[in-house]
Image (cartoon, rainbow, N blue to C red):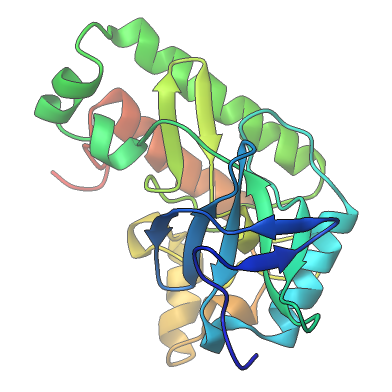
Length: 225
């Protein structure tokens, strides 16, 4: 790709789309509003690989219809037909880590929440993850920054392009949310990369236990005294 599209420029999916306001940027790419309830994730040039394109082709060929899961809808290309990103539903809410993991944050964002609301939030998150597991999809990188909260019953999952599907692994991880067996393998092999192996539901369940504990005890890690 000689030029990565940005705000005001056209990209092409099933129709031509104009990239609107840049909403966010990260290590992999930038998010642009498409003014139709969806957004475009346009990858940085160094992240535009054949492997990423092939994985997204698999994901868009097997759509996941789960409310609040921002699954890739279609690949996006530039005017020359080069893969540059994908389109997904626009999420709402505040990152879980920013909203609930300290008492002041909880009181600022959800001042009327009680313990029952925290429990309902856990149930809402688990229902979405169970739906994904039922499709053979492993999140891999369960990161509280990738879960947005609107209410105890409305939660949005973002960065779904990193999810493990088929033989395509989740290429990223978060040290706090890594199964100790996986961590041992990372250390023993001298720096095994997350994208070099497939994770299991057992890996995921370990991470989920920590996440649910931290929700119910407002950011307290069960392994930190």
